Length: 349
Image 1 (cartoon, rainbow, N blue to C red):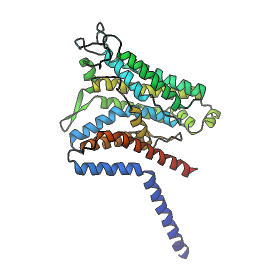
Image 2 (cartoon, one colour):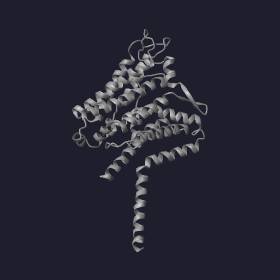
Image 3 (tube, rainbow, N blue to C red):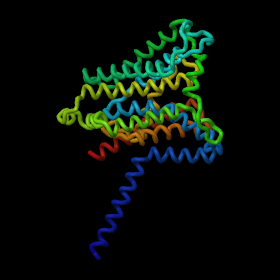
């Protein structure tokens, strides 16, 4: 009995310490949940069906980019070119699917192409850009930050030149064909009278596909092994060069699907389409537990991260917070999330 009594205080201390660790490690997520509760209390429309559909739609729009960036982070890297890939694939998709009667039609003699053919073209563009990034990372051992920063600048130049091609003259690409807009923004389901756009189903399909790739394929296992310890992965037979290229190519394909969706969702595409999408993606990944130390991440965490960010930014807008402060908030979230991530890593060491 005496021994048990003496052990109890120590166990209580350990339990209290453990609770403190859990609270600190999930501090950002807890703060965001509290912020969402505060917004819901101050704006009765925050949890109305129309608002919920809006939040789900925005989550679906940004989710594929986060799923792509997450793979790069698992390899202890990142991808700063994601937003520009979204931009260029959005503008290419929109230009190939402009209505015949569109004013300032970019390619006057071009009939609107088949939607699925254009989607395939966009995915190929994104995958090629991703493979380009992966090649430089794997072949020359350059840090992904440097490689993707260079690619970001190259793509922006290409996009600026493309926007001035044909009869466009640098104008926004609009006047899209109905086959395109209906495929992306049309609706087959309503929640409380609010239509759920089709790109939500596209995002759900991509999420399921990425979950399968990450958890049920040899490629997924190799990706996590490489992110955890490159030398150990080499010894165990992982093809580092091939795996790295495939991770970045898959990421590029995910950005391209986002670009295809954004082309119709935005409906008036400029060189700024996709700007800073990579920041939201990186923030969502870190919030969702994808670690910059490599080899750690879950699809479910990424979904939660994207959803929480959308909840916060939609909510802040609804309670009248100045939108000029949103970049400050995003920057703060990224810094805080990365600091917590590094703290977890140092604690484990």
